[in-house]
Image (tube, rainbow, N blue to C red; front, side, top):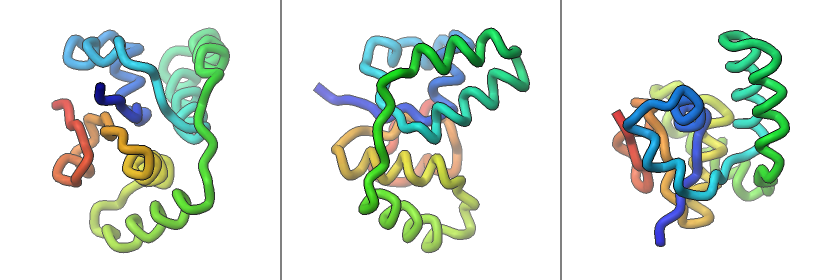
Amino acid sequence: MVNYFFDTYAIVELVKKNPKFMPYGEYPLITTMLNKIELYWWALNFNGEELGRLILNSLSKVQEIPNDVIESAMKLRKDQKKRDLSYADTIGYAFARKHNLLFLTGDKQFRDLPGVEYVE
């Protein structure tokens, strides 16, 4: 069975009940603390503190980011400088690659990278 790493984009689309992302709601939600922070920021700005707190409380099992993932991610970010990849997304992508997860996103900057499940 395949599992996914959910980037912030994918989780936001699940929260918004985007039909294209709803089938992924059946999978375990694997993400990092950085994505949790981005989600709270999104909720706070677009939906308010109540949704932000709900997200903070519901994402209790986020993954730690080991040093080798940070190294791999920042090398990728440097090598792919023209893509203007964010720290959180690049770390999530490197985490997914290390753990044989598909990186689930709707972010066009990752569309053609290996190990990505891009949902348009």
